[in-house]
Length: 129
Image (cartoon, rainbow, N blue to C red; front, side, top):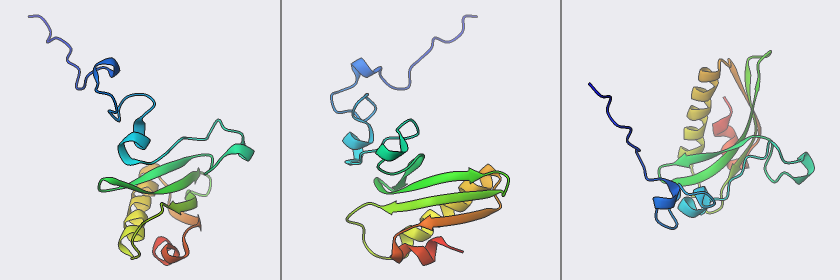
């Protein structure tokens, strides 16, 4: 019996419509109005956010960025900085949700502690244990 033919789950970039967020050059900025770039190869003096900063998705919006590092010897997830995107509503729901996801990330990476550095003042109490 012949194996099943390979099927792509999504069209190739050339077949995708203009503005599709999966095409090169559009990405998160096209889909969410959110400019993101990993700056691990950017010289420290030229970085805007940090060495390894990941976006935080809440529903269908990118709402924050977290600069992360793992201290394997100390078994600690280091949250170097949390940056809130402009235009967010005040409240505890979002920072508490971010904290839960940081706890999940720490568990997945084998970290026993989470250390939070810089964060918006209104979020600090909810991000810390």
